[in-house]
Image 1: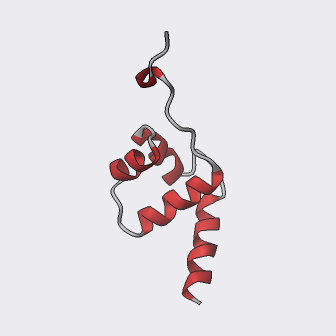
Image 2 (image 1 turned 180 degrees about the vertical axis):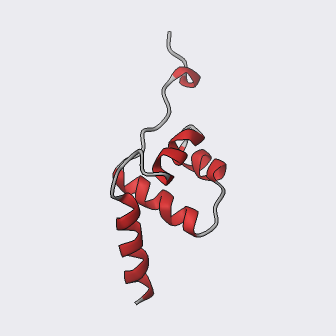
Length: 69
């Protein structure tokens, strides 16, 4: 029998990674972002340093610039 606590955490998508960058830019703590997405804080670090979902930072910057315009 598999219990819910044994299920793997959520896997971040590219759009999630863009949202992670935007949240980091807004000053969120990485552990709070990890809790929000139900992932290990290491996955937030992987996104932050470009090891996961390459190009997501650039996309976040485009969205940030277009929102400011």
